[in-house]
Image 1 (cartoon, helix red, strand yellow):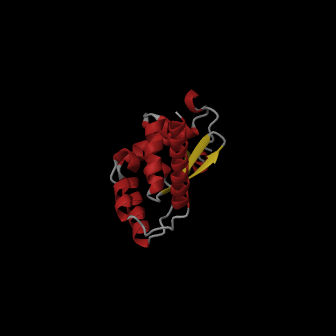
Image 2 (tube, rainbow, N blue to C red):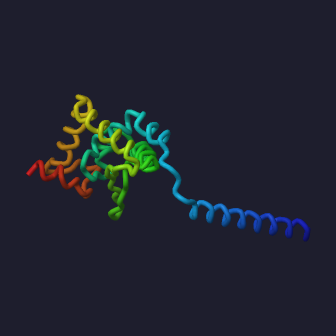
Image 3 (tube, rainbow, N blue to C red):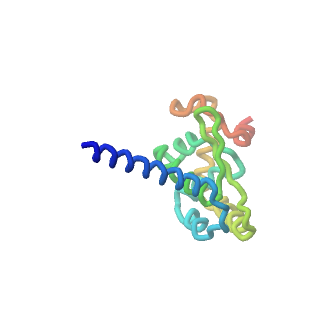
Length: 161
């Protein structure tokens, strides 16, 4: 019995050491070169393109995406996390609300591609309808019940004034 207890202790100790080593490796990893494949995969999804279009030059709370795209919050958050990993969007927390904005990639080629994609999205009819829905929701005198209390995107609320 004593050997079993000491083996379990040693096993836990090894797991703890491996966890610490893995954590240190992840936390001290040097930035790598720009991941073009991840960048283009991020742009190769309809939902992520719709999110980028809705962001435009604004900083928008996740709850507005849920309301405009009529999809669930976990799906929206998963796509936004993918865009973050690709270096296309940044995030900021304000209490319970997560706000996202487009971030210009450091890579000049990626920055140009993103600018071109954003211009192309702005001219697409479906994307324009999404943007109009966002403006209607943001500029409504009273927000829908599901997002009451959420901070409105600043530049969109200035349109309604």
